[in-house]
Length: 208
Image (cartoon, rainbow, N blue to C red; front, side, top):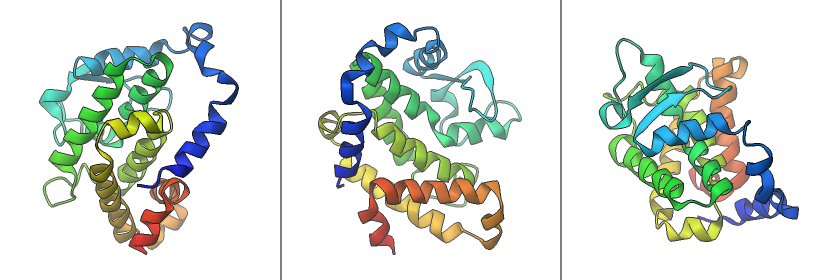
């Protein structure tokens, strides 16, 4: 993929080296983030971010419930998982600490999802609701902005991620319906496509 736009964004976002002292200055604010990543490193997940639509403070096993299962009678838990804000958490934790464990967990969870549920089909409709797919794309791309291009290239996943993003983009375009023009679903579906157009326009041009 052509990552120049992401790199240009990073050069502006990280200028004046404000990030180096952020963890120390704002440790209290960052406690929920590191609580979530603490569980993620143990292959567990909680939803306690202020932006989480369905909060859940009980840690559940990612090994047991990924990617198309949910605890009890609560599909909303799966919808939250499918949006993959946890990738954003891991990339932010890596940017703040430079600890490789966060980057490696980011890579392993992303690749595991792509391998297991990376194509929409009749058995994983709960994983591929257009609303959640749009948010998932935004979280994937936003998480990339916290990972240096040099570090990203060392992960060796560029081709896999590129193909997965194409699958997502084609699905979002194929599943778009007129009523999305006036709905929150439409905003989030379009947001995923817009994020891709902003950072990876060559993929959008390929689909179109």
